[in-house]
Length: 322
Image (cartoon, rainbow, N blue to C red; front, side, top):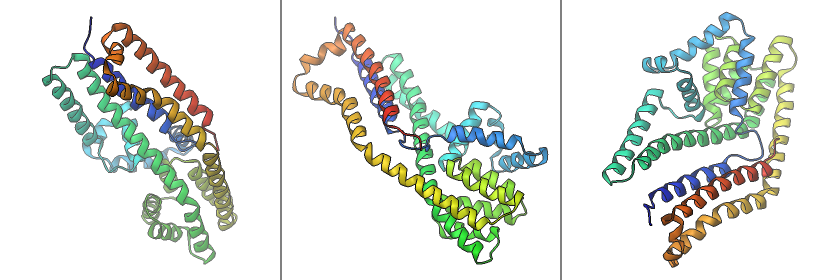
C-alpha cells in the first residue's frame, strides 16, 4: 500500500543540508575553534581583578538594548547573542528571535494550509531555526578567517608606527583607518576604548573576546606581555607577524594538497542524491518503492544516517590542525 511521500522529501531535504554542512565546515586550521578559544578567554578573564571584570561586564551591557539585557540572563540566549556578535551582523537578540520565529511560524502555517502532515510542519519550524544557526556559524567562520588573514598586514602597520616613535594608541588608530573590515573596525573600536581612558589590558581583552582566534591570542599575548614585563614591542610584533604568515602558508599548502580528497568526498556524498533525481526523471516507477513502500522509507532513513556519519568521518580525515 502506498503512503504519502512527504516524509521522504523532508528526509531528503534535511539530509542534503546537514551532510553538505558537515563537508563545508572549514578545513585545515582552527577557523571553527572560536568556541574553544572563547572558553580560554573566559579563563583568562577569571584571573583579572574584580574591578576589571566589572568594567568588562558593564561595557558589554551598555552596548545592548534594554530588552536584550533581560534576554541575555538566559544562558542559551546569551550564547546566541555572542554568536551574533561574532558573526559581525548588526542584529539585536530580540530582533533575531522575532524574525526567525515569524519565518518559522509562517512556514508551518503555509504547510498547514497546503494540507501537509503535522510532523512536516514541526520539521519546517525546527528547520528554520537550524538554518539560522548554520547561517550564523558560516558567517562566524568566514569573518574570523578574514580577520586572521588581515592580521599580519595590520601588525606590519603597527610595527612601522612604533618604529616611527608613535604610541601604541596611535598605532591602533592607524590600522583602524587603513585596513578594511573586519579588522579595521575591531582596531578602531579598541582605539576608541583606549582614547576614552580604558586600560590597554581591558581594551585588548574586549578585542580578543570579539575575535577569538589563535592569531588574536598570539597578538594580545605579545602586547600584554610587553606591558607587564617591558621589552621591544616592535620586535615582538615582527616575530608574531612572521609566525602567522608561515602558518597561513602551511594552511594553504594543506588545502591545495587535500583538494582532490575534498572533491572525492563531495562526489561520494552527493552521488546518491543526484542518481535519485536522475532516476526519478527518467524512470519514476523504478524508484517509487523507495518512498511508497514503508520498507523503502526505512532503507532511506538508514542510508541518510549512515551517509551523515560517513561525511563526518571523511571530514575528519581530510582536516588538519595547524
